[in-house]
Length: 442
Image (cartoon, rainbow, N blue to C red; front, side, top):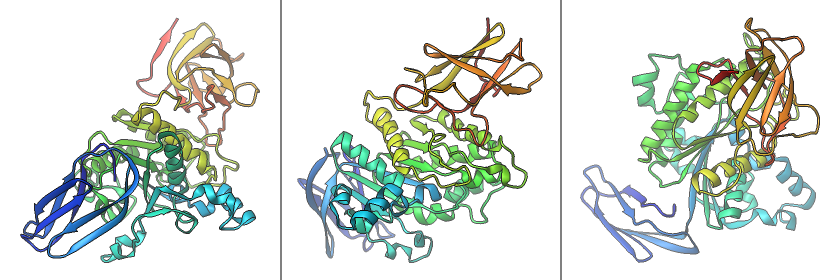
């Protein structure tokens, strides 16, 4: 259960039946409503590593054992979030080489990290019966669990030293559309943008809504490839913001943390009607959700071996980077959590000077000249540029341009640039010719 917040406990009983919930020194009572629904809220509690029991008493008594109090997160999305630990090369190699019960995988057994995997059969009327509830971290349950979600939980546990509960609810190949609240889709989106699914709200109704209002700290989201193939930009931003707002609303927490993954390099141009800029334009649409409070985004431009593989295997690093976001922004740790992020530009003669946030210790990750910078004049034709680090700024120029106007960075589906900060976090792709970008001439 989530620490430091009132914890919702709910269920069903006979209409008008008295219900008593006891946990530790707390006792809460309520009466089931006309539909038999009831809910109580336990007072906020500190983290506890010692398991405890809860009793729920009415005409019958239910006892729930082995309960911990700590941090709870929900991760969702499509196949890259669903990507299981069994598919993770780090985990799978250890299991193959040492055996399922070897010491090599002992660090993946942790009674203080709990996993809840939402089965997609929840979309069926009786789907709730397929779930087995929470499980302690061990090979049997871990192998099917979200690798990004687990590695996120493991990093949090290492840094916070409190129990971590991770809920995973994802569906491979899904667009964002079926994860949207169906009511919101009907009222505000369907009339504006075409939906990718004939059943908007399909996965939300079966795999997200039943989880609310289970008290938690925040959400992780790794999805977008399917909508990118549909060449969505503004449409995706609109849907994504609605998803964030509606999920927060269902959890009665307008400030719940929401952190997401910018999708990785991939050869989208092989798709019909797509080109090398389809991906960076979609990433830009993802980033516009950062206008909402308590959001954050990690970059994955350096986590791909082959751009034809839409499922990069470096999920441990994705989980770690998401955890850095949470540790800094949710838990207030004074750590680096983002790579160089474009802030503003200044035109200085035949060069452009770029300023960044999170720019401490700008460096080339491989020691080679900076890559994937392009520059354009008033005609808007971008050409390869020379980019040089000067303190915490980048100076960009081209011998073919005397009057530069704009710069683009990593604005190509295959871009795997080498610009990092001293924390080893990659720079965020950007273009200065995006509307409302900050420019100055000097």
